[in-house]
Length: 395
Image (cartoon, rainbow, N blue to C red; front, side, top):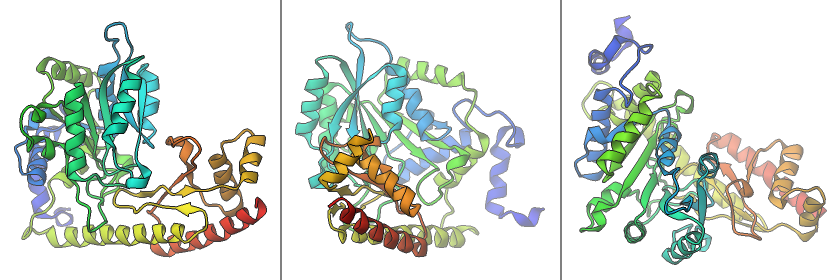
């Protein structure tokens, strides 16, 4: 049995309480792994990270829900509101509805690579403040479903906006390893905020990471982490108490978190194989991101922004008036109508843009870049043939 395991991973086992994946761990995760996550963040950002501000979670979504639950109370007889991007990952709108929190929608700028315009944030905040006490803002970077990677200057603007409005920032950064565009670079909100001068480096921040994305893709094992910055100690203590009621995140998921955070170093026995597999996965995703954007932009009526990062394309589609009328006759949103026709006639499954939110009068859908290249090429050819027939049918 000993020959199955590389020596540098055998050493780690002695730091795991219980010596079994069936054992409970600390409610916030195994201490050694939390320390490794802190080291990962320090290497990523070039700044200190306190392992006691890091909690391991059953996927990023669990951590996000734990922090969102802090905002359930009314403020000055107003229900709480949280700013969320449109398009957005539906976890946010669904959880806000579950907790009775208002979703204050701000629209990403599609014509500017899905950037966040501060004027749009101001508009959304002022509009939302009429009915809600707006207390936080969600930013997804790299974007899901939109695939953009925020520029550093844009992140600085968002931090300044959050400080001015006294908002906590939810930094959903689960796709931080998935950056494909050579002119794009991931900057964490933690890094940018730390390097800003006072008072902007004191903004409350909760950032999230997951083992479901990146080059690991271990979605079903449920592992992730969150880091809390500048939270009031009393608030953080109560958050930890609430998390304790859930006992602990899955132990196997925590182990995979350790694999993501504590990767083999150059010269260690596992390094060559790990680096080879990591580079192969990310290089292939980069090729597929280019392939899918090129294919959609070659189709009449499509406009697809560059997939700078994450795992999805979110093209805009101009639908014929007859198709829009046919959709309304069936009681469907036009993008849902299109998605069902595509599924029924080709077997290809996409997610309608209305599931993520979109500007009124526009239609989009999300599709993934995950299929291997031969299958993706086949899928895109089938898609092109379907769309040509669809356009002719409803011309």
